[in-house]
Amino acid sequence: MLRENFTSELKLAMKAGDKTRVGAIRMITAALKDRDIEARTTGKEVGEEEILGLLQKLVKSRQESMEIYEKNGRPELAAQEREEIAVISTFLPQPMSDEEVAVAIKAAITETGAASIKDMGKVIAVLKAQHAGKMDFGKASGLVKAALAG
Figure 1: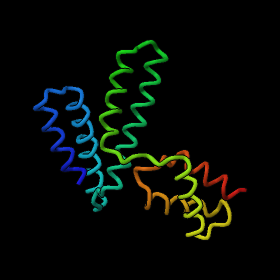
Figure 2: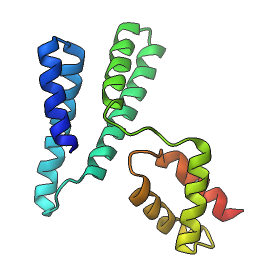
Figure 3: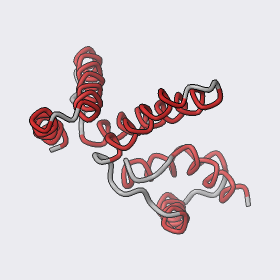
Figure 4: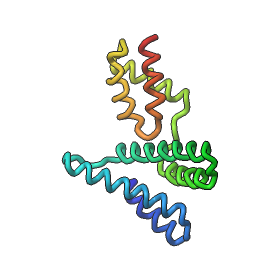
């Protein structure tokens, strides 16, 4: 579904003459083609969850670049990164709130029967399966660790 969405959005952006959106969508499709090539060597197919993960990585990369540009006095490059983040974010589902993340973590801990930090991998695996693209797993892993330690 996302693949077709990228193609149709690219066509619309090209017709509208939106160079920023065209560039960002082409960057997404290029990253996706790289992932497809990588997946061919392992014999796996790139699914929707992996595509969402790829989009999140692209956003995170742009955020890091934006911060570097702002620190080094390059506001025009930071603005370009901000625009690309906005385009990529349109393809991502609405992120979960902090409260929703906490509830999901509690549910995953209960579901896996996790009792200690040794079970953290099981909990994260369940969260990734259920909430791919909606949850920041960098933050979530710290919350899971705290929940299992406490």
